[in-house]
Image: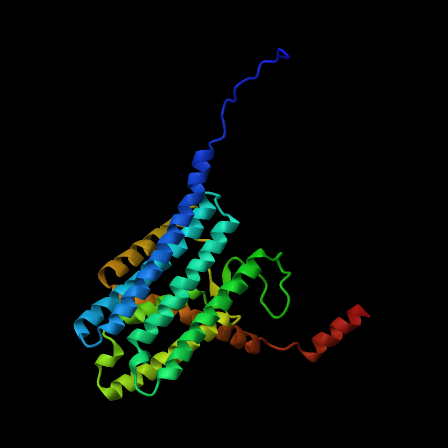
Length: 298
């Protein structure tokens, strides 16, 4: 016994609460996985029910809505983790696995079962395009994780400089979201149309899925909207827009979701095209200007 008196801590660490904060973002990610699994189950059941067109339509619509809910959960888990300062390596890895399932496997299977999988003559191409979408999505996620962990501006190759305002390549949730919006807009399976329409719609869907896959592994920039949050300094702009978004989803979900996802997917190539046009329209320096600058340098 040394005679020293140990004073109790005024504010002991709240380990239980801290663990709870770390669990909350992971619960959103688990909800993401649940939505992806639900979409897979409904897609398979819809494919098995193609003889019953009404039942198949309902099942494919359920699968598409599940992907839509997963996109919402995927956007919330990261924001909540940053707001509560509960980011972790475990959460990052779990989120990547969830994205491969929910936004890679589920939409690839959904496009196959709802669309081109039952079209005569397209069986092998349909299988290959769906796998192409899945592998491009996985590559997109792997590149994103590497860039997120790399020091700023140290990524080799032709990859654009890291900027939190933009994603490099189409994010896989939005690629899956567009496919889900298309199916939600017209959940009737393509096999339910007449043969001529079925062939046209299946070919268009094959082309669209291939384009989405290429956009995911491209170096086009897409807005991340990470600067928009509860601490935004423009609430009088964001709150009305958020109200319109909620009203659009609630009352006109089929048209509104298809419009929003299409605009997001298209704005990457449009921004690139605008940049090229602006670069070519920039006036070239006049000879006398270059001569003058050369004489100053001399």
